[in-house]
Length: 213
Image (cartoon, rainbow, N blue to C red; front, side):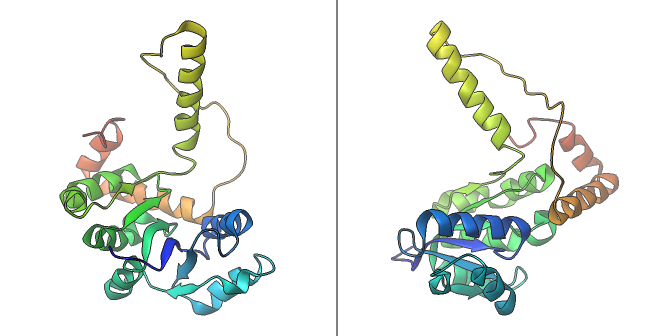
């Protein structure tokens, strides 16, 4: 990829998480410290979300692309180094963006918790991603942050106290606060439908290491 216009494009900027992410990027970096843009399928909704971010946000570029429009996705990927996708359920709407990023060598991350879809994307696009240099990182959200940061903290503590790292760490969640977004609920419903219809997916869901090479 040669000289893209943006460092980051938030794809799905009008979604629940997309709005939170856009607000964070604007609060932290404004419109000049990081070259970033908001993307989605509705110009009007993008403008509405942008107008709520704060003074100066009108300078944030808007890109129009639909998850079902391969040509628009290819154009979007050609303009950025990284795509952050909040468009879910990913099993229904996410594959085209993965394919576009792998084809163009554009780095990508999302917050999916749909393990069956992650496995499917690995099987279909890993070789292409290796060929073009695209780095595809899934589950950069609620499903992974507690365990990732928890493991990191425990390993640091073990090293400092015992001069050795932990060989095995198990995480158990006893209580949650807050509620699930509409996108999360839709993802769970779709995952349930897929698992009921496909024995292979049920087997994968029972294996905590199904996405590991």
